[in-house]
Image 1 (tube, one colour):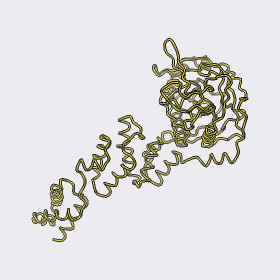
Image 2 (cartoon, one colour):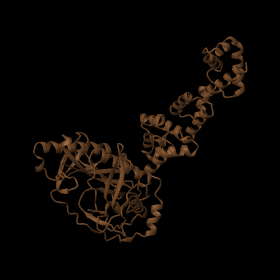
Image 3 (spheres, rainbow, N blue to C red):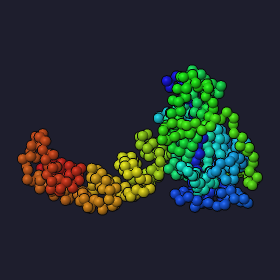
Length: 486
């Protein structure tokens, strides 16, 4: 039935800024810990008499993200109070930014790839705020962890510009990559650093999707904690709304907020949103506005590093990698950084990419480890590649060595010695053996000259005498030279 409908999806992506030493308004450490309530100050818990102090680096990170997204930056930075009661917000308000006065960025766009198709995300705004504490709910009680309270948080709001779950997730993956490459955040969903609210509606296939009058009833899905969850929640919600449409009940559905339940793989009704919540925004009186100078913006712009899209273009255009290999390598910044270091140490780009995308990534996936914990350093990989190019071991032997390095966590040169696979590449040593083999079989030399295939026999005899250690290409060359002399 999906072919009879159009889908509109908007996203609100929340990403914690992890690359600051302290929180956005307090001196508490900005860090992750499994132990609750260790990174806290009185301000984080809303104690009376505490005053916020703006973390300049957090503002710079927010402005950097704004620039990358092509947004317009404000002349002055304001913060505001968003007033509401919730147990994880003990002040009963959140320090945030609303669109008037302007937040750190408004009206941008980002081009991204979705399964080979170029798409464009329309950015409504991006703003900086403080995160709330985290709550854990049990059968008879709840606990609150204030480690997260006050962590600098970027909220990115898009227009309803996505038309499938795949497009929405591709955009989120692109944004995660930007945050990682720009040094703004680890953007690690396992640490709860990314959360998403998703807005979904459907409309008939033959109506104009640019006219808001044709849009269906918007359903908001709150606090989805993984990209897989975003995909599943969108697909479920599309199916649910289509069923309502087919049953003639869609027009009865009110605007509402739902949550994604990972156990049942369904969205569950939370509350209706017939009327917008009045948060009674007003300018935060304890944080004076401050000017964003042109020189400050220029210094921030100059600090934007090479992003994933630029590295991908470099890998394809300069290193002649396939689009697939380049995409795989740049997907995760630590992987790309590893590759960059291999190249800087003299590794041949295409050969290095083959090692990385096949054996190394396969090992990481199998063992569920990060590349930062990989025993095989970039230098070790280059050493192994050099052994092959210098003829010390064969290409086939290098794979055996690689697997042993990953299994035993011993350096490649140690494994080569233990396995006894180092090739003989000394011309004189191989030539002496070749001469003896040819001297012992003069009749086969004549057969070779008559067109019979005896050449492989000579190669086999040399390999037998050297226990397979003779350099194959050098052996072949010397056999041809010695036959021609006779």
